[in-house]
Amino acid sequence: MAEAEGPGPEDRKPKSDEARSAFTPPPGMEPEVPAEDQPTSEFAVPDGMAAPPPEAEEGSAFAAPATYSAQHSPPAYTPGAGFPVSRMTESPWQDRMRTMLRMPVDVRPVPEPVQKQPESGPAVGRVLDLTLRIGELLLAGGEGAEDVEAAMLAVARSYGLDRCEPTVTFTMLSITYHPSLVANPVSANRTVRRRGTDYTRLAAVFRLVDDISAHEVDISLEEAYRRLAEIRRNRHPYPTWTLTAAAGLLAGAASVLVGGGVTVFFCAALGAVLGDRMAWYCAGRGLPEFYQFVLAAMPPAAIGVALKTAEIDVRASAVITGGLFALLPGRALVAGVQDGLTGFYITASARLLEVMYLFIGIIVGVLVVLYVGLQFGAQPNPDEILQIPSRPVLQILASMVLVFTFAILLQQERSTVWIVTLNGGVAWVTFGALRAAELPPVPSTAIAAGLVGLFGQLFSRYRFASALPYVTAAIGPLLPGSATYYGLLSIAENRLDVGLASLVNAAAIALAIAIGVNLGSETSRLFMRIPGAQSAAKRRAAKRTRGY
Image (cartoon, rainbow, N blue to C red; front, side, top):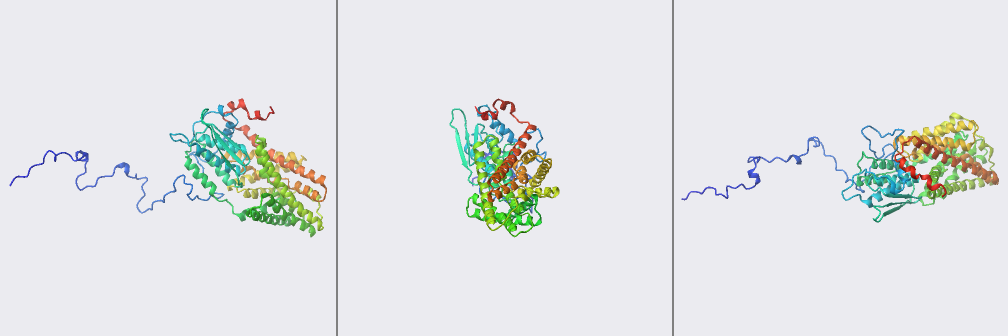
């Protein structure tokens, strides 16, 4: 029997690199997982704890967003030093971009892109689309045209598109990007078809723009789209019944402001609630806004005429005046005058035309009721409208309640409601002091509105936010409700000269409010350091309005 042969040369060769490795595990032992494949201890889920649910894919437009409330809105970036607060000499992105807008494209400094870009360069189409969507929300929320253009330019430059020209009109936004002198420009536009008042949403959009333009925050295009979709889908912070109750309280406070008592307060509140409900019903049926204002103005006027016809010893005119305070379009008026003063004349003309139509709707609704009441023997006393009793403490409290409810109607965040309420109280105290010093109503209103604009702008810079939530509601007590009603009553009694003169006075007061707010806002910029001011001095914005 032949002996078994030993291993040959082929059998003695290593089968693989593992056979030659000095770290080969002995037989019977499991090989260890490489360190890079193991989760580290600080990220491992301990035994007995459930793993967190998987998050929605970043950038998904179909992920269900969490609804925000007036207290909890989409979060903004907070640096390690704490909540973002600006010093008096710092300038937020609004001023930086406004300076860039007032400079020709070819002399603007080329910045470093704030957000990271892929190696192939920025996605031009997506950046322009994101820019237009952000501008649409700002314009639909009532922001001024210049601030909308500044926000659009800030977003485009942050993503690497520095040679951009945004253009804003009342219903159209467009933006053009010039890659170079030889490449074809890329343009995109978007139409604003729906407008709504939600200052909580407006504040969230401002925080998004602030985060995009901040060097400390890294927001990809997908993340920006996700946050924008969350802002668009979220519900309003206050329910419908709260808004209706706020409209009633606003009218009641306004009636106390012009001399009404307890009975007048409840009558004015009831009329405003009925008018608000009628306007909501018509809005749900697709009726134009002009007719909504006509119908909303009728219930307060009807209650005031009924009180006068029944010969109840109350100030019936205060009921109608309170209802007018709840309807006068002060927000649109301020935005229209601001656009005109900053050089956006097409947008300003459209906004002021909108204000005129809404004002005419209020006039028609009140005049119809007054004319019918006169036919049934109602005899309103025009003199009681002009004889407002002096009740300083009560009127200050009423003015602050008016501002508070106005802020609720504008869907503001709770953190801004108290600030704007104090701002409105300061404005009314200033107005009352100037009127006690026998200063005429128009300059008194302009000075008080100037303080509103100044403090509102300073608050907005302190919080890196829009100035509208700190300004719009604060002008409520200054609105010309009494002058408007006196003019309408005079026209109904066929005293056209007196009525038209009173309406012209009301229009002058309204313009004084708008100009005062804008002047106060511009005054605050005197304390700010504006970057690029030396370069912008060669081509100031006033050059285009000198008439040659």
